[in-house]
Length: 258
Length: 327
View 1: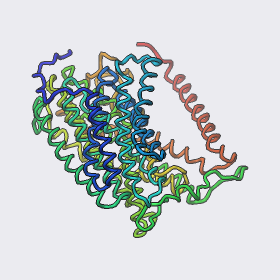
View 2: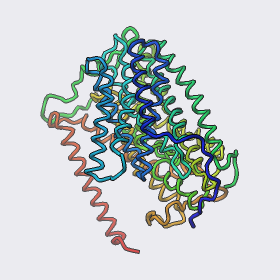
View 3: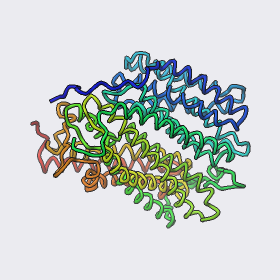
View 4: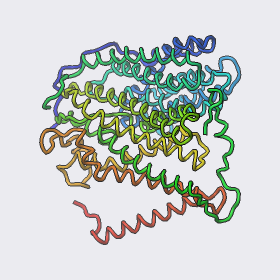
């Protein structure tokens, strides 16, 4: 009954990048992004570009954990990471010291590590290096949430409580953008380069949504900058992703008998 | 509700004028016509939201049936179903609902002066649902093409009409489901005086609705429609997994015929479940016999009543159709 894999092996569309090196890139880029936004809010165009690696780092961590056969747990593990990250990032804006944004990211990393330790030692899930991967996922979600909470709460006239309204969306949109690249590409021919291309496409889609939301919070120039760069990024990354699909698909046709 | 002041958002109305828990103890009914109307309207909208949610997820074989559609090529069944893998229904519907409600809340403050309170809510909800349905479509298309590309070793082709035919259908169903959820959230916040902001209520309602669609509605697609060659109720053992029906009465099964089937029973029963939850939950706004403990006591009473009803139905069924038998 069961058919053996008989098709051609998938064309390799890029090199494998380890999650830790992606995370190191992401943490440098995100720190620079948050710093740039704190110094000059009108350079938000750079901040938006520099936050995209954080999505890729989170998606790669989800892939590493879930490829040990979690399956339906993909969503649960992503919710856990995004929840830890978003809450840490939101709490950090109440701390009124320099570099408070970094404290939120470090807190997310530590809490994520402890959560992974509990899952591996107490529940005995026995997934190799799960602690580090959950910590990376939480820290990546915290970077994204920190930047957008900073953008939304930057307006002096705005009460801090107004950011409460948009927090549920930041949490769930970040979670979906982190878990969906692997979840949407799962299968025998899944490979990391294509998953990361999808992660970048969905990252720019998410920042496009946040740019739309920011029309109500920030001045019009900031919003238009986020919308423009995210829209351009979405077009570019989707084109790259579709090219990868075109190279890897078994057969592309308009219609036909299967 | 939010009000607009010099073009800036303020939300102090969220945190003031919130006398949710009636201070006067003693049994009295809050039967103002507007509250009764709001409870009934929220229940009716919840039934519609449940129907549309289940049909939307069935159009693209999301959630539980998705595993079967995903496995089919591996055991030799090439198919023409839409493979919409969006991280499980509860998080996905939480996302669409939170998106719709957040956009709607922010737009409603802009529309308030021009259109009045009621019309601004409806108009803003429509725009919010449009944004949410657009994002849903992007995620769905990405999932289908990427999962089909991962099926390369099993020779599953990517056919563009499989993407383009169900796309308007699940866009429309998703739009209607998110619109209903957003309107329920506005009613819960503005009329029934729930203290939480609208997007948070929508997130919670979205996750609830996704869970119900996944548990109640998917049975009628995943274990019935996809497995029509097997006896209904026999379950899906490991040996049958992925062995789905790929051929229809004529031609191939596709994702447009599925809602035609599930709208008979799967959709309405999802709507009934979600509608009952929202409707019965809102009864705590009508009664007051124990102060702030009223919703909790009322919830316990409703759970006990539902337990008794379920038990009596099961006893009746066993007496009528005999005990469960082994094959």
